[in-house]
Length: 328
Image (cartoon, rainbow, N blue to C red; front, side, top):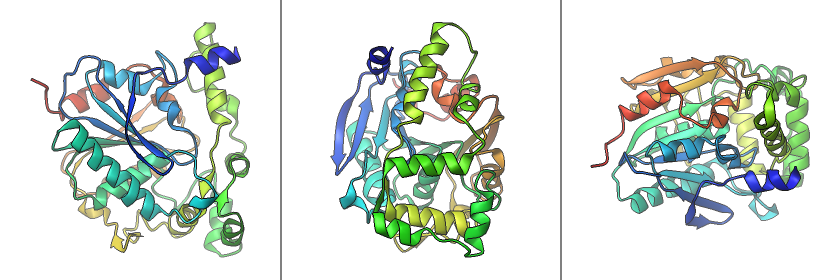
C-alpha cells in the first residue's frame, strides 16, 4: 500500500515557473481552457501543500483544471535553520506578492483570483488587503482570522493574553521549529481532536477509495514541516495573543492591514464540522470588509473536506464562473 500511496500523490500535470529560496510557484494548465482569469492558490505554513492535489479524483487542483482554469500554486517549501528570520512580512511581500506578479506575467493576464486555504487563507487575506496588484476575486477556505475565542487554543490563548506564558525564548533558541515539535504542538493544542475524527469527515467510510484516501490523508497529517521562528512569533503574539488582524491593527512591512479597505469580490467558506477552524473564527470578517460583492457560505464537511472533493461544488462553480473572464 505504501508504494501505491507514494505513486498516487500529486499527479496533476504541472511545471515550475518561478523559484525563490525553498519556495516554488507551480503552474497547472487547464485541461481545456475556458477562462482567462487564472487561480492563484496559497496554502498553509503548517503542512505540505500536496493536500490540494492529493490523488486523481481527490484533488482540488485537478478539479479546477478540468473546469477550464489555469492554476498556480505557491508552495513555500520546507524552511531550514537559515530561514529562522523569515517573517510574515517576508511571506507576504517576498513570496506571495512576487508569486502573484510572476503568475500575472506568465499568464499574460491583468488580474487573477487568489484562493487561500486554512492559514494560507489568513496570509491571502493579509496580502489582498495590502496588494496593489489587480485581484479580481478572493476566496478563503476555513481561514483562522478572529482569535478572540479560539476553540482548541482557548487555554493557551488566555495564558498568552495574561502573559502567564511566552514561547518567544523557545522559538529564539530553535530559530526554526522542527517538524516533530510542530506536530506535537498541534496535537497537544487540538486535543481531543484526533486523526480518526478528521477521517470521519472526509467522506463515506467504505470501499477501496476510502481506504486509499485514509492512507493518503494519514501520510499528509503526519507530514508537518518546520516553521520559521520569526513568522511563528508574529502569529502567536500579533494574531493569537492580541488579535490584531481582525481589529485592523496588524502591521506588515510597516503598513497597516486595514480590512475595512478591502473591496475585492469575496467568498468565505467554512464547514459544519470543522473542529480546527469553526465559523466563529471566519465569519466576523464579513462585517468588516468594504466589499460590495461578498458571500459567506457554510457547507457540510470537515476542515479538509473541500480539498478532497475531486470536483468543484456547485456553489463554488457558479460563484467563480460568474466572476471570471471567459476565454474566447
